[in-house]
Length: 157
Image 1 (cartoon, helix red, strand yellow):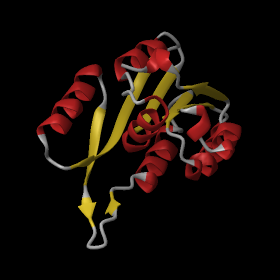
Image 2 (image 1 turned 30 degrees about the vertical axis):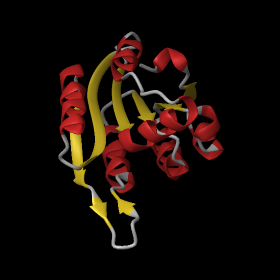
Image 3 (image 1 turned 90 degrees about the vertical axis):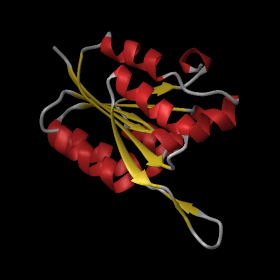
Image 4 (image 1 turned 135 degrees about the vertical axis):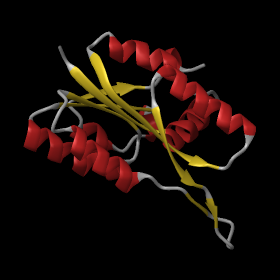
């Protein structure tokens, strides 16, 4: 049985699908696709916490699907910019999970993750899959993946 760990960079997927398609990502459809390929041993969704009702409902929907939701406070800086970056947390969790699974699935277009995918593929000889919006996914991340799955309208609400 293929043991799978999923890591969802929620902010990245939200903004890239909204920018490219004007629609939201369908996490339930993704779960169905991935579960057809093996046993989902771990599923983590990384998001920021603002406390608004719509966001809380979305987080509960992710939990209902099977994701563990990890939250970081949303920080609004004085200059108007915001912070809520999970890159280090996702990286550490991928490295930990790589020791016990056969396949890593990353939902993100962020090229910062190319190094961690190269590392776990080399150190653990596992399969690393990336789901991302093609025109908004870093080429280095696509190249670092064993398989790249382009997010298209079949994975949207």
